[in-house]
Length: 366
Image 1: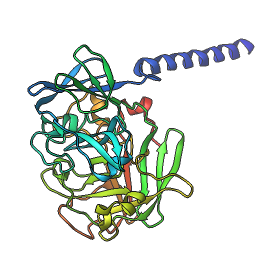
Image 2 (image 1 turned 90 degrees about the vertical axis):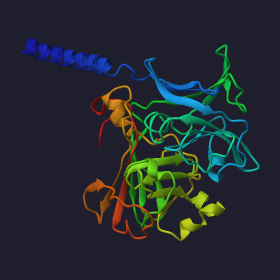
Image 3 (image 1 turned 180 degrees about the vertical axis):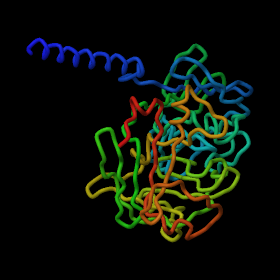
Image 4 (image 1 turned 135 degrees about the horizontal axis):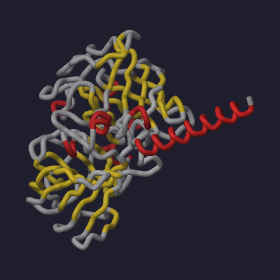
């Protein structure tokens, strides 16, 4: 009997050792930070490149124009970003914050060469010959908060400190979450509704709803994104498309301070296409903070985007679902244009955050 118990214990030990070995083989980057490096040469005609974690490279398109100045004052919410880092990521623009002066951000932008990005001022952006909503503006888009560097021709890097000079390279380093801190956000679409972040440590209430969503508006850039996908994410907004690619229609989720203090957001209190969220009592403002307004969402993969493998391609496809009148989770309805009551029966929203690895190993589901 004693011999049998010892054998059983040995079997259990062997099973645990084998399991841990398999886990390490399947997920070799466990505990390591892997980085997607985006390299943007300051040279017309040069090719922008993405360097994947394994060292392989992807083309991000050809540089058609380089900035000759910076943009100040930039869009209002840029002031809640981190200087020297990405402050907005979208299907039609990437914005980088250089500094905050007199309560307004100074930015540089990256835009597709054929698109419209009102926040990117003439002469203050890189124009890249690549389709909006793909590559740098899609599955390979950097997370907000990603640090930005300038690299000189010798390979020496320094933190972004001003307008890049011709011959330098703009380098964006974006961490690739395998098992992100937050992997899903549920929102109860009613006044006082909870915003629940599902994290690696379990669910927590991250905010409360002040003004729920009820309709759809004509937000520029949604024509470059599909239904139920993130059009833009920055320190003051999450913009979600409700329309098919090629049509305009979407909703925006924004924090309370932005809604109260930014003149251009006055209509958010009158129209139905905006949702306004408030921090919990005693907590700091939501602007520029995770998990909602920093470091979580990207536009994601669409069309023919392909990343490192099946799981990274699948995982960088953030999805937004809804429940109608408390029913089962389903895709957002297809709604274009301005329709004030199109989402009046939506009682819940769910935002899935991007990941990079196979869910079964490093991305457990609740």
